[in-house]
Image (tube, rainbow, N blue to C red):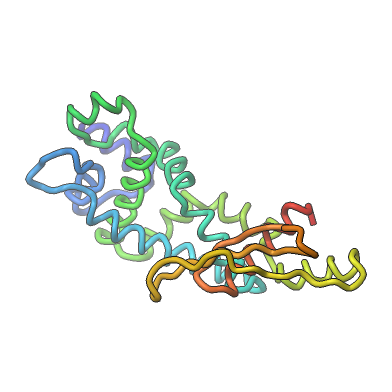
Length: 226
């Protein structure tokens, strides 16, 4: 295991001062080890990832509004994306799981990989601070961030969509319909549809109505290939 851990550190371009943190990040809750498991680190890493990605998007997209940034971040850090990045890093090969868990899942599930990647981010943050974890996130997510920032999500999607509808549909403007608002007040998520004369053009989610409307407009622009 020590050789594989050293190889893994080479893969992620980070050498731990406290190797215990790396072992902990790679320990699934099915293992009943005295050292514990990666759940607490996953909690921390989730918050660190959100912060760093938000800061990178904020600095790199100076004309994008809140809704666009929220939409891009959500797509970059969703479960499917995280699992894909974890597979690319080879986390599955070094993830410690119990024998019983391994019998049920010969290969780690997407959820296990997602949690382990977030735990790894939390471990790097505790071991080295914000600078190395930012470097790791940039090298792991950088291409995805650049691709997302270069798409039609950039700029002011509501304004661009309204300009298009006015030009192509005799001055008509789109309507934004709130479909749902779920969760506690401090973490509410809104889902909005944008329509033109009763025809739905797109949908979006966000932490506010404004951000959900921007996400819906961005989706509409994508669907319309504008």
